[in-house]
Length: 339
Image (cartoon, rainbow, N blue to C red; front, side, top):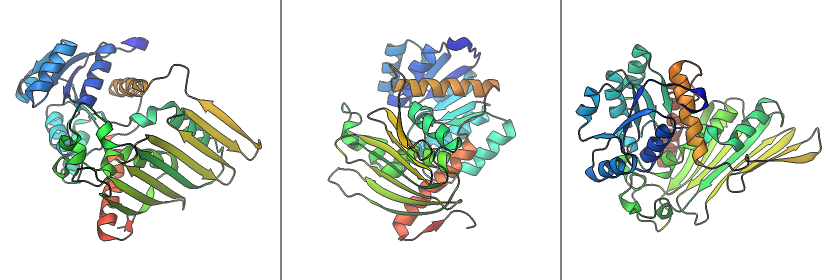
């Protein structure tokens, strides 16, 4: 593999939608041995034509070929059942975010992973964005002192996500598939926890507020209280016509601003009494996050690195997202620690 990596493992990609195809392309670029499966015939044909790899019509055929690694890239509500099946066959697991749309079955998956000593990673590509990596480093080095608050935001008009597809048929729009902006935009919940630590309690207002023709919530405002007392605000929506993704962290010794669209981190340090700007690396492209994520996963399988977000840690992130949904439904603050 590029960068001197070597993986003798055979990868099975389950799900040949947009993210499945992205992972297939990246794995092939990394010289991995790859096969694919999708329950629908059209995506199977497209993948076979585009990548010229082995594509099976039935999942049972895939298990007969003894893959060592399974990538789960199907609608959210199907993640755990397929991951359990793959784990039973001894496969290391890469599961697209979020881990699930509910907690049922998650303990069984965790027990299976623990029993078989499987390596797992839940899709956390934003942790590989150079801007957020820089923000994390500044925080770890005490660059803003004690963090008292953080505001993160993401918004994009859902029909623009995959313009060649009917957004009303996608998993984002459908309750039974685990859709809705809270689970869809769980990256924001994940990385604010990555930066500020464990969440103690959650409050949320959410709902379908726009004209978009979906069954799920399209807007959410989540308030988080962290164990150290810091306050986090997370806004997410399917409505904004101009894509927006930002992070604003406030400390008693400085401030950090990150903007996905400008590709810059800005850091104000009280000690230096000035703003510093850190742009993305020259020529950086979005797919690099996914390549770096997959390289990390391969190194984790080899035992060279520890997963940034395994199924155990991803369960905590899922609990926060589900608590936000519960809070919006009940109109109350949900305690995560000690309940």
